[in-house]
Amino acid sequence: MTKKILVVDDDAAFRNAFKIALEVEDYDVVDVSDGNKAVEILATNEIDLVFTDILMPEMEGNELANFVKKSHPDIKVIGMTGGGKIGNAKKVKALCVHPLFEEILTKPCSTDIVAEAIEKALG
Image (cartoon, rainbow, N blue to C red; front, side, top):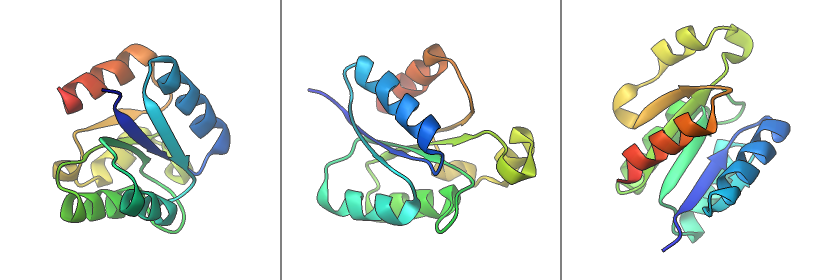
């Protein structure tokens, strides 16, 4: 059965490229530009895994992950960051609430790292 992945990132170019890479690996992918839109998708779709950017306008990744864990505890969440306005992915990772995330990846990352994170999260 194909796993359904929700990709949440305010960077349209990254989000589109990431979606294509996941679709090549035969995942069913839904992508949105912010956490509020992700909440709408989660209300009407069966999602297995959420990839979310950490630093976004409106609802940032920690808030989205917290919502997912409270309202959909079976859905796994993987965070992603390139550092954003802070400019340092390591500093952003330190701001993350780690129990909310299966893993936090640094953008950009290789497809091997993404595949390993998905395998770890979904078993």
